[in-house]
Image (cartoon, rainbow, N blue to C red; front, side, top):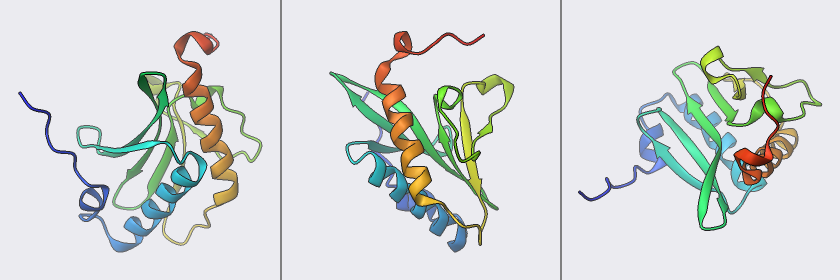
Length: 137
């Protein structure tokens, strides 16, 4: 069975209001600026745009942009291990206890420089692989 055709992010975002598409576009640019080699892929089952970083012959998932009707999240798969000097990160639900994210609504300022730093750190942590990360308590 052939793999399904990838969904273009613009098509995925087309069902959201213009201001949400704008925020998602700005957050996608943050990821591209931070990690130009990142691979962007719509993950329809998760309703998000996911990012993988090359790691040898494979890739490692490290970040996501999740649009919702009223806001957009930029999340980090290994966020619990990230430093947070700007105090921006929020913990995810208990079932995703290693994930942390930021959320932006229309009109919110987006601190692109800080988010680029966070995104680079997220990619660096993903590149370590599971054996390179400290165990969670």
